[in-house]
Amino acid sequence: MKKQPPPAASSAICKRPKVFFRPTWVEIDKSDFHFNLKKIKDYLAKDTKVMAVVKANAYGHGGIALAKEAQAAGLQWLAVSSIEEGIQLREAGIKANILILGNIFPFENFQVVIAHSLTPTISTITGLMALEELAVKINKRINFYLQVDTGMGRIGALPEAVYPLLQKIAQSSEVRMTGMYTHFAVADTDPVFTKIQIDTFTKIVKFAKVNLGLRFIAHSANSAALFKYKRSHLDMVRPGLSLYGLSPFKHSDRFLKLKPVLSWKTKITFLKKVPAGFCVSYGRTFVTSKTSIIATLPVGYADGLNRLLSNRGNVLVGGKRCPIVGRITMDMTMVDVSDVKGVSLGDEVVIIGTQGSEQIKTDELAKLQDTINYEVTCAISSRVPRIVV
Image (tube, rainbow, N blue to C red):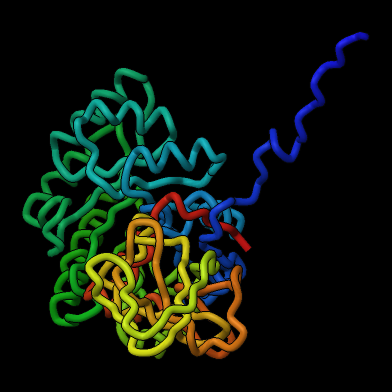
Protein backbone atom coordinates (compact mmCIF):
# COMPACT_ATOMS: atom_id res chain seq x y z
CA MET A 1 0.00 0.00 0.00
CA LYS A 2 1.35 3.36 -1.02
CA LYS A 3 2.23 5.54 1.93
CA GLN A 4 0.15 8.70 2.01
CA PRO A 5 1.82 12.06 2.74
CA PRO A 6 0.85 13.73 6.00
CA PRO A 7 -2.13 16.06 5.73
CA ALA A 8 -1.29 19.72 5.09
CA ALA A 9 -1.32 21.79 8.23
CA SER A 10 -4.30 24.06 8.60
CA SER A 11 -3.67 27.58 7.40
CA ALA A 12 -5.27 28.77 10.62
CA ILE A 13 -2.42 27.06 12.49
CA CYS A 14 0.44 27.90 10.12
CA LYS A 15 -0.44 31.50 9.39
CA ARG A 16 -0.35 33.87 12.33
CA PRO A 17 -3.65 35.73 12.41
CA LYS A 18 -3.71 39.49 12.24
CA VAL A 19 -5.44 39.63 15.61
CA PHE A 20 -3.40 39.62 18.81
CA PHE A 21 -3.63 36.74 21.25
CA ARG A 22 -3.33 38.55 24.58
CA PRO A 23 -6.50 40.68 24.99
CA THR A 24 -4.83 43.96 25.96
CA TRP A 25 -4.78 46.77 23.42
CA VAL A 26 -4.90 50.51 22.80
CA GLU A 27 -7.52 51.99 20.47
CA ILE A 28 -6.65 55.16 18.54
CA ASP A 29 -9.68 57.01 17.20
CA LYS A 30 -8.55 58.74 14.02
CA SER A 31 -11.82 60.69 13.73
CA ASP A 32 -11.10 62.29 17.11
CA PHE A 33 -7.56 63.11 15.95
CA HIS A 34 -8.95 64.91 12.90
CA PHE A 35 -11.55 66.64 15.09
CA ASN A 36 -8.79 68.01 17.32
CA LEU A 37 -6.69 69.09 14.35
CA LYS A 38 -9.62 70.99 12.86
CA LYS A 39 -10.35 72.66 16.20
CA ILE A 40 -6.74 73.80 16.43
CA LYS A 41 -6.71 75.06 12.83
CA ASP A 42 -9.92 77.00 13.38
CA TYR A 43 -8.37 78.64 16.45
CA LEU A 44 -5.43 79.96 14.41
CA ALA A 45 -5.12 82.73 11.86
CA LYS A 46 -5.82 81.45 8.36
CA ASP A 47 -2.20 81.56 7.19
CA THR A 48 -0.67 80.01 10.35
CA LYS A 49 0.74 76.55 9.64
CA VAL A 50 0.62 73.51 11.93
CA MET A 51 3.55 71.19 12.65
CA ALA A 52 2.33 67.94 14.24
CA VAL A 53 4.66 66.69 16.97
CA VAL A 54 4.72 62.91 16.62
CA LYS A 55 7.85 62.20 18.68
CA ALA A 56 7.95 59.35 21.21
CA ASN A 57 5.54 57.26 19.13
CA ALA A 58 3.13 60.23 19.04
CA TYR A 59 3.21 60.43 22.85
CA GLY A 60 2.45 56.71 22.99
CA HIS A 61 -0.48 56.91 20.57
CA GLY A 62 1.20 55.36 17.51
CA GLY A 63 3.61 57.59 15.63
CA ILE A 64 3.41 56.05 12.17
CA ALA A 65 -0.38 55.78 12.12
CA LEU A 66 -0.94 59.36 13.26
CA ALA A 67 1.84 60.75 11.07
CA LYS A 68 -0.07 59.24 8.14
CA GLU A 69 -3.30 60.84 9.37
CA ALA A 70 -1.57 64.23 9.75
CA GLN A 71 -0.12 63.93 6.25
CA ALA A 72 -3.52 62.95 4.86
CA ALA A 73 -4.98 66.06 6.49
CA GLY A 74 -2.56 68.19 4.50
CA LEU A 75 0.03 69.02 7.15
CA GLN A 76 3.38 69.74 5.54
CA TRP A 77 5.50 69.43 8.70
CA LEU A 78 6.01 66.74 11.33
CA ALA A 79 8.40 66.85 14.30
CA VAL A 80 10.33 63.98 15.88
CA SER A 81 13.00 63.83 18.58
CA SER A 82 15.67 61.73 16.89
CA ILE A 83 17.14 60.53 13.62
CA GLU A 84 15.81 57.04 14.35
CA GLU A 85 12.24 58.31 14.63
CA GLY A 86 12.63 60.23 11.37
CA ILE A 87 13.95 57.19 9.53
CA GLN A 88 11.08 55.10 10.86
CA LEU A 89 8.57 57.53 9.35
CA ARG A 90 10.40 57.64 6.03
CA GLU A 91 10.47 53.85 5.86
CA ALA A 92 6.71 53.87 6.50
CA GLY A 93 6.24 56.02 3.41
CA ILE A 94 5.82 59.44 5.03
CA LYS A 95 6.65 62.16 2.47
CA ALA A 96 6.01 65.28 4.60
CA ASN A 97 8.85 67.45 5.88
CA ILE A 98 10.28 66.03 9.12
CA LEU A 99 12.09 68.23 11.64
CA ILE A 100 14.40 66.63 14.19
CA LEU A 101 13.84 68.59 17.40
CA GLY A 102 16.81 66.99 19.14
CA ASN A 103 20.42 68.10 18.93
CA ILE A 104 22.48 66.31 16.25
CA PHE A 105 25.73 64.92 17.65
CA PRO A 106 28.19 63.67 16.66
CA PHE A 107 28.16 65.90 13.59
CA GLU A 108 28.95 62.94 11.31
CA ASN A 109 25.28 62.03 11.78
CA PHE A 110 24.32 64.94 9.52
CA GLN A 111 25.09 62.56 6.63
CA VAL A 112 22.37 60.18 7.80
CA VAL A 113 19.93 63.04 8.31
CA ILE A 114 20.39 64.34 4.77
CA ALA A 115 20.35 60.84 3.24
CA HIS A 116 16.83 60.40 4.61
CA SER A 117 15.63 63.90 3.65
CA LEU A 118 15.21 64.97 7.28
CA THR A 119 15.65 68.54 8.51
CA PRO A 120 18.30 68.93 11.23
CA THR A 121 18.39 71.41 14.10
CA ILE A 122 21.58 73.32 14.79
CA SER A 123 22.38 75.72 17.62
CA THR A 124 26.12 76.46 17.37
CA ILE A 125 28.71 77.82 14.98
CA THR A 126 30.54 74.46 15.08
CA GLY A 127 27.33 72.73 14.04
CA LEU A 128 26.86 75.24 11.24
CA MET A 129 30.42 74.68 10.00
CA ALA A 130 29.98 70.90 10.04
CA LEU A 131 26.80 71.24 8.00
CA GLU A 132 28.58 73.55 5.53
CA GLU A 133 31.41 71.03 5.11
CA LEU A 134 28.89 68.30 4.32
CA ALA A 135 27.12 70.56 1.81
CA VAL A 136 30.41 71.14 -0.01
CA LYS A 137 31.19 67.41 0.07
CA ILE A 138 27.87 66.36 -1.49
CA ASN A 139 27.64 69.48 -3.67
CA LYS A 140 24.16 70.30 -2.43
CA ARG A 141 22.72 73.21 -0.46
CA ILE A 142 21.35 71.90 2.85
CA ASN A 143 18.32 73.27 4.69
CA PHE A 144 18.23 73.39 8.49
CA TYR A 145 16.37 74.90 11.44
CA LEU A 146 17.98 77.05 14.12
CA GLN A 147 16.89 76.64 17.73
CA VAL A 148 17.15 79.56 20.14
CA ASP A 149 17.24 79.04 23.92
CA THR A 150 15.08 81.84 25.34
CA GLY A 151 14.74 80.25 28.77
CA MET A 152 14.19 76.50 28.51
CA GLY A 153 17.84 75.79 29.34
CA ARG A 154 18.00 72.59 27.35
CA ILE A 155 19.44 73.06 23.85
CA GLY A 156 19.57 76.07 21.55
CA ALA A 157 21.70 79.15 20.99
CA LEU A 158 21.51 81.68 23.81
CA PRO A 159 20.22 85.13 22.77
CA GLU A 160 23.64 86.77 23.17
CA ALA A 161 25.21 84.11 20.92
CA VAL A 162 22.51 83.97 18.29
CA TYR A 163 23.20 87.34 16.64
CA PRO A 164 26.76 86.53 15.44
CA LEU A 165 25.50 83.07 14.46
CA LEU A 166 22.76 84.62 12.32
CA GLN A 167 25.35 86.87 10.66
CA LYS A 168 27.30 83.79 9.59
CA ILE A 169 24.13 82.06 8.43
CA ALA A 170 23.22 85.07 6.29
CA GLN A 171 26.65 84.95 4.62
CA SER A 172 26.60 81.20 3.90
CA SER A 173 26.00 79.94 0.39
CA GLU A 174 26.28 76.27 1.37
CA VAL A 175 23.36 76.04 3.80
CA ARG A 176 19.96 77.69 4.15
CA MET A 177 18.06 78.40 7.39
CA THR A 178 14.46 77.57 6.50
CA GLY A 179 13.17 77.78 10.06
CA MET A 180 13.86 79.16 13.52
CA TYR A 181 12.19 78.10 16.74
CA THR A 182 12.28 78.24 20.52
CA HIS A 183 10.57 76.28 23.28
CA PHE A 184 8.65 77.52 26.32
CA ALA A 185 9.49 76.33 29.82
CA VAL A 186 6.36 77.37 31.74
CA ALA A 187 3.68 78.32 29.21
CA ASP A 188 1.17 76.35 31.27
CA THR A 189 1.89 78.10 34.59
CA ASP A 190 3.88 81.36 34.35
CA PRO A 191 2.64 84.14 32.03
CA VAL A 192 5.32 86.62 33.12
CA PHE A 193 8.27 84.40 32.17
CA THR A 194 6.53 83.16 29.04
CA LYS A 195 5.97 86.71 27.80
CA ILE A 196 9.68 87.42 28.34
CA GLN A 197 10.46 84.37 26.18
CA ILE A 198 8.03 85.52 23.49
CA ASP A 199 9.50 89.04 23.47
CA THR A 200 13.06 87.73 23.28
CA PHE A 201 12.28 85.39 20.42
CA THR A 202 10.21 87.83 18.35
CA LYS A 203 13.01 90.38 18.63
CA ILE A 204 15.50 87.84 17.23
CA VAL A 205 13.09 86.82 14.46
CA LYS A 206 12.60 90.46 13.47
CA PHE A 207 16.37 91.05 13.37
CA ALA A 208 16.91 88.01 11.14
CA LYS A 209 14.09 88.89 8.75
CA VAL A 210 14.40 92.70 8.63
CA ASN A 211 18.09 93.37 9.23
CA LEU A 212 19.54 90.31 7.51
CA GLY A 213 16.86 89.66 4.92
CA LEU A 214 16.53 85.99 5.82
CA ARG A 215 13.35 84.16 4.84
CA PHE A 216 12.23 81.36 7.12
CA ILE A 217 9.36 79.90 9.15
CA ALA A 218 9.33 81.04 12.80
CA HIS A 219 7.56 78.96 15.41
CA SER A 220 7.44 78.79 19.18
CA ALA A 221 4.01 77.68 20.42
CA ASN A 222 3.60 74.31 22.07
CA SER A 223 0.06 73.27 23.05
CA ALA A 224 -0.10 75.41 26.20
CA ALA A 225 1.19 78.54 24.44
CA LEU A 226 -1.05 77.86 21.45
CA PHE A 227 -4.06 78.07 23.78
CA LYS A 228 -2.95 80.97 25.98
CA TYR A 229 -0.71 83.28 23.95
CA LYS A 230 -1.80 84.18 20.43
CA ARG A 231 1.33 86.34 20.09
CA SER A 232 3.32 83.11 20.12
CA HIS A 233 1.60 81.67 17.03
CA LEU A 234 3.91 83.39 14.50
CA ASP A 235 4.23 81.49 11.18
CA MET A 236 3.58 78.04 12.58
CA VAL A 237 2.54 76.29 15.82
CA ARG A 238 3.82 73.00 17.25
CA PRO A 239 0.99 71.12 18.99
CA GLY A 240 1.74 67.74 20.47
CA LEU A 241 -0.45 66.60 23.34
CA SER A 242 -3.44 68.75 22.32
CA LEU A 243 -3.62 66.90 18.98
CA TYR A 244 -4.20 63.77 21.02
CA GLY A 245 -6.87 65.38 23.20
CA LEU A 246 -4.66 65.65 26.29
CA SER A 247 -5.00 68.78 28.43
CA PRO A 248 -1.92 71.03 28.46
CA PHE A 249 -3.08 72.64 31.71
CA LYS A 250 -6.03 72.61 34.09
CA HIS A 251 -9.27 73.96 32.58
CA SER A 252 -7.73 74.15 29.11
CA ASP A 253 -11.16 73.24 27.73
CA ARG A 254 -12.15 76.86 28.37
CA PHE A 255 -10.03 77.64 25.31
CA LEU A 256 -10.59 74.54 23.18
CA LYS A 257 -12.74 71.49 23.82
CA LEU A 258 -10.85 68.51 22.44
CA LYS A 259 -11.46 64.77 22.37
CA PRO A 260 -9.12 62.09 23.82
CA VAL A 261 -7.78 60.04 20.93
CA LEU A 262 -6.58 57.09 23.02
CA SER A 263 -8.48 54.38 24.87
CA TRP A 264 -6.75 51.51 26.68
CA LYS A 265 -8.67 48.27 27.04
CA THR A 266 -8.27 44.67 28.18
CA LYS A 267 -10.48 41.71 29.10
CA ILE A 268 -11.08 39.57 32.15
CA THR A 269 -9.12 36.35 31.68
CA PHE A 270 -9.70 34.78 35.12
CA LEU A 271 -12.45 35.04 37.76
CA LYS A 272 -12.55 33.68 41.27
CA LYS A 273 -14.91 33.95 44.24
CA VAL A 274 -12.92 34.27 47.45
CA PRO A 275 -13.83 34.42 51.15
CA ALA A 276 -13.28 37.24 53.60
CA GLY A 277 -9.68 37.42 54.80
CA PHE A 278 -8.28 36.41 51.39
CA CYS A 279 -4.95 38.00 50.39
CA VAL A 280 -4.31 39.29 46.87
CA SER A 281 -0.95 39.63 45.09
CA TYR A 282 2.64 40.23 46.23
CA GLY A 283 3.23 41.51 49.71
CA ARG A 284 -0.34 40.68 50.82
CA THR A 285 -1.12 44.40 50.69
CA PHE A 286 -4.84 43.76 50.12
CA VAL A 287 -7.07 41.52 52.20
CA THR A 288 -10.77 41.07 51.42
CA SER A 289 -13.18 42.24 54.11
CA LYS A 290 -16.03 40.09 52.79
CA THR A 291 -16.74 37.40 50.22
CA SER A 292 -15.58 38.93 46.94
CA ILE A 293 -15.22 38.30 43.22
CA ILE A 294 -11.69 39.02 42.00
CA ALA A 295 -10.95 39.38 38.30
CA THR A 296 -7.49 38.96 36.82
CA LEU A 297 -6.53 41.17 33.86
CA PRO A 298 -3.69 40.36 31.43
CA VAL A 299 -1.96 43.71 31.85
CA GLY A 300 0.75 44.90 34.23
CA TYR A 301 3.56 47.34 34.80
CA ALA A 302 5.53 45.90 31.87
CA ASP A 303 2.68 47.23 29.72
CA GLY A 304 2.87 50.64 31.36
CA LEU A 305 0.18 50.24 34.00
CA ASN A 306 2.13 51.94 36.74
CA ARG A 307 2.71 50.04 39.97
CA LEU A 308 1.79 53.22 41.88
CA LEU A 309 -1.85 52.51 40.93
CA SER A 310 -1.81 49.42 43.16
CA ASN A 311 -4.69 49.62 45.67
CA ARG A 312 -5.42 53.15 44.38
CA GLY A 313 -6.55 53.09 40.76
CA ASN A 314 -9.78 51.94 39.17
CA VAL A 315 -10.87 50.34 35.92
CA LEU A 316 -14.30 50.16 34.28
CA VAL A 317 -16.18 46.88 34.08
CA GLY A 318 -19.82 46.72 33.06
CA GLY A 319 -19.96 50.51 33.19
CA LYS A 320 -18.93 50.53 36.86
CA ARG A 321 -15.72 51.64 38.57
CA CYS A 322 -13.88 48.67 40.02
CA PRO A 323 -10.86 49.10 42.30
CA ILE A 324 -7.44 47.67 41.56
CA VAL A 325 -6.64 45.40 44.50
CA GLY A 326 -3.23 44.23 45.59
CA ARG A 327 0.00 45.09 43.86
CA ILE A 328 0.05 45.41 40.09
CA THR A 329 2.43 42.74 38.83
CA MET A 330 4.59 42.67 35.71
CA ASP A 331 1.98 41.00 33.49
CA MET A 332 -1.25 40.84 35.49
CA THR A 333 -3.51 43.02 37.62
CA MET A 334 -6.35 42.09 39.91
CA VAL A 335 -9.58 44.07 40.40
CA ASP A 336 -12.58 43.65 42.67
CA VAL A 337 -15.67 43.15 40.49
CA SER A 338 -18.02 42.11 43.28
CA ASP A 339 -20.46 44.94 42.48
CA VAL A 340 -20.72 44.17 38.76
CA LYS A 341 -23.93 42.24 38.14
CA GLY A 342 -23.45 39.26 35.84
CA VAL A 343 -19.70 39.73 35.46
CA SER A 344 -18.22 37.10 33.17
CA LEU A 345 -14.97 35.78 31.80
CA GLY A 346 -14.05 37.78 28.70
CA ASP A 347 -15.83 40.98 29.71
CA GLU A 348 -14.20 44.11 28.31
CA VAL A 349 -12.34 46.29 30.80
CA VAL A 350 -11.44 49.96 30.24
CA ILE A 351 -8.22 51.29 31.77
CA ILE A 352 -8.38 54.66 29.99
CA GLY A 353 -11.54 55.74 28.23
CA THR A 354 -15.31 55.56 28.50
CA GLN A 355 -17.68 52.72 29.28
CA GLY A 356 -21.35 53.49 29.73
CA SER A 357 -21.70 56.75 31.64
CA GLU A 358 -18.33 56.38 33.38
CA GLN A 359 -14.97 57.67 32.18
CA ILE A 360 -11.37 57.32 33.33
CA LYS A 361 -9.18 60.09 31.97
CA THR A 362 -5.44 60.09 31.56
CA ASP A 363 -5.39 63.08 33.92
CA GLU A 364 -6.88 60.91 36.68
CA LEU A 365 -4.13 58.31 36.36
CA ALA A 366 -1.49 61.05 36.18
CA LYS A 367 -2.72 62.60 39.44
CA LEU A 368 -2.58 59.26 41.23
CA GLN A 369 1.00 58.80 39.99
CA ASP A 370 2.03 62.41 40.74
CA THR A 371 3.02 63.00 37.14
CA ILE A 372 1.75 64.53 33.88
CA ASN A 373 -0.85 63.06 31.54
CA TYR A 374 1.48 62.51 28.61
CA GLU A 375 3.95 60.52 30.71
CA VAL A 376 1.06 58.11 31.27
CA THR A 377 0.48 57.59 27.54
CA CYS A 378 4.19 57.56 26.68
CA ALA A 379 4.67 54.81 29.26
CA ILE A 380 2.29 52.39 27.52
CA SER A 381 4.82 49.89 26.24
CA SER A 382 5.36 48.73 22.69
CA ARG A 383 4.08 45.26 23.51
CA VAL A 384 0.56 46.73 23.74
CA PRO A 385 -0.88 46.78 20.17
CA ARG A 386 -2.18 50.10 18.85
CA ILE A 387 -5.36 49.62 16.84
CA VAL A 388 -6.60 52.51 14.68
CA VAL A 389 -10.40 52.69 14.70
